[in-house]
Amino acid sequence: MTTAPAPVLKVCGATAPHDVEVLAAAGADRVGLWHGVPGGPADLPERELAALAAAARATGALEPVLVTFLSDPEALAAVARRAGIAHIQLHAYQPPAFVKALRAALPGAHLIKVLHVRGGRCLERPLIGAYEKAGTDLFLLDATTEDGRVGSTGVRLTESHVLDLADRFTLPFWLAGGLTADSRPEYDEVARHPRYRGIDVDTAARDGRGSFSAAAVAGLARAWGTARYVPHA
Image (cartoon, rainbow, N blue to C red; front, side):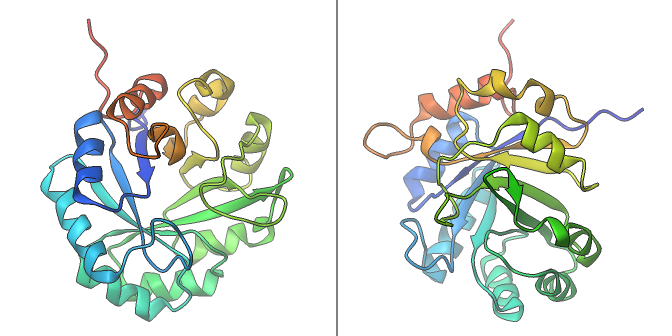
């Protein structure tokens, strides 16, 4: 019987080298770098994306994840190659055909597809099987607002909705949506799920001024028992 890997802590929205340094030192495993997110507060031009991806890799602790709404698979593949990013998070409503084309263009990439949940209903539910067949490696379960806003919404999924959705697919998954260190007890069953692989946060990793906080990141890693948290004896 194989043991599931320790869950990862992904923190989204880095925009400067200092952000990368704070996250690496505090125990994050992945850093989400936004590109092709129109109007997004953390959206990066390609040159800055590449620079921050290199800075993340240089820490020896952080793996960069390209988070995007882009809808052209060839253009996205070219950006990922130039930036040297192997993990790509499709955070909008790109169809299975997009995933298939991106997989063909980047056979060695790790493709993460967000499944959006609104009011307890997964909007991509009829397409889950097609996403799996197209070459998705991992699903990220996230909530939208009632008016359809996606990404860093702070809206939390109930554990029952997460477990119900996880029963609909066979891939590993991450959990997002308003998660905090204090919310960990609400997800005991999720944390024990054999295909659970980690959490994705943004606001919970920041202080009151909106800057990344080493204490907040370390608290998340401790509460959720993620890969780089080592309990003290």
